[in-house]
Image (cartoon, rainbow, N blue to C red; front, side, top):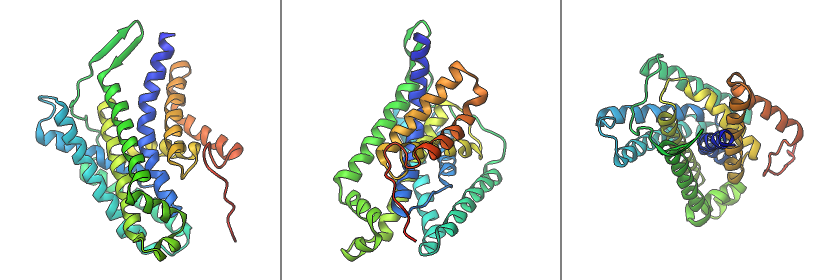
Amino acid sequence: MEGFLQLLLNGTALGSIYALIALGYTMVYGILRLINFAHGDIVMVGAYAGLFTALALHASDHPTAGGFLVVMAAAMAASALLGYLIERLAYRPLRNVSRLNLLITAVGVSLFLENLGQVVFGATPRVFPDIMPNVALFQSGELSITNQQVTVFGTSIFLMVVLEWIVQKTKLGRAMRAVSHSHETASLVGIPTDTIISFTFVLGSALAAAAGILVGISYPRVDPLMGVMIGIKAFVAAVLGGIGSIRGAVVGGFLMGISESMVVGYGSSTYRDALAFAILILILIFKPAGLFGKYQPEKV
């Protein structure tokens, strides 16, 4: 029983990271009906921004909560800026072209960031600074709860609550919901759609950077291609929950993380990556709209 609870705890912490990344996918899709395949690479940029910030501040010499927050804030700011530039330079000029062109552009941006990362940061993986030593807060047989797991879960939940508050309770959130419903109608009532779309990219990219830092403290290894597989898994989580649904992205992320943890614990770690594709195939076959999504036929 303790082994099962440990796997459940590990999966919940991992799932909270997937949920943060999946939220970026689902918000952009809800606004533009675009799958931003570069989103996983924004996670990578956030992780590197946090790494260099931690090294500059020597945060690993004297790990503190304040140092962790500074590293997190710097990473979120860097990725938010990158998200804005991607939307402004790559996607906005193609706003009125076919979705296929946008999709190809998204793949191109992803490949550009991955290769640029290898040129700038080097292809060799780096060890993420130990800005938060792993300390057991509770130990009972096989069950162990560490401060890193609590931090990962607590930070993720806090950011999800903040996002929910922004979307549901603020003017920007109401504008985001209006734009997701209809760009034309939102423009007619005076909502600056371009600004709202840029804000959506900024917000999703900031969450991706936070996930990158949480990955760094949980699995202290970063490299320019780290965002590929984690981005695919988060995308599957968004599809599982219902692409375009914020609640679905959160639920899908946790289900993805827990499923992966159980596969590793009771099966083989060899299949942990294959699980994402298996789930994607099953969802597309049996429930294409996802758990919380709604089927909307295309008008032709």
